[in-house]
Amino acid sequence: MFLSRRGWLWTHLAGGTITIVLGPLQFLSRWPRVYPRLHRWAGRVYLLGMLIAATGATGLIATSPAPMEIRTAFAATQLAWLSTALIALVAIYRGQVTVHRRWMSRHYLVTLSPISFRMLLPASIAIGLVPAPTLIATLLLLSWALPLLLIDGVFRSLELVRKPALAEARGAGNAAAI
Image 1: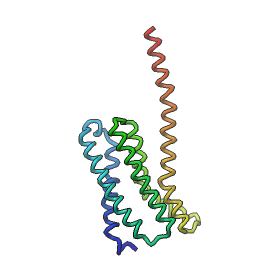
Image 2 (image 1 turned 180 degrees about the horizontal axis):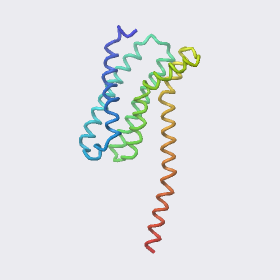
Image 3 (image 1 turned 120 degrees about the vertical axis):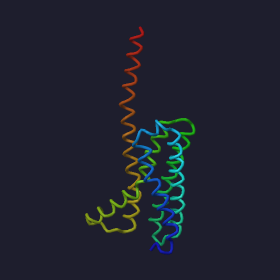
Image 4 (image 1 turned 30 degrees about the vertical axis):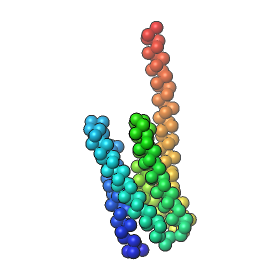
């Protein structure tokens, strides 16, 4: 299936490996705050890896013999991947660090969607669903759309918790000043 398109496949896998490996280093450590220049350079390499992977994905989608609904779902995944990265990049150039962090969190969830898809498909088959093109396309979309909905719920919940706490802290500060 991929023999005639292995150049696109290797391009996609090489770039994707860079993003999957560098992502946790950007999120799960203190070094971005301690070494901001290193964080910026790692971020640039991460985005370069994403662009390399996206180039490979474009080639794979364009040359795929898969039904149109599957290719459309892959293209939607790629669009989500590129757009979340672009929004995060614009945010950091504007100095909006919190917005950047949230969009990079979303972006990394989309980065992990192939892994999610590869867990959802066997689980669906195990419960008796037939791996028809419609199911595959639906699972491809769910592999990134559902995590994005969940993380947006988490972000909104955090805002609801923080706003009253901030208002209370400001009120206590004003009361102490009187």
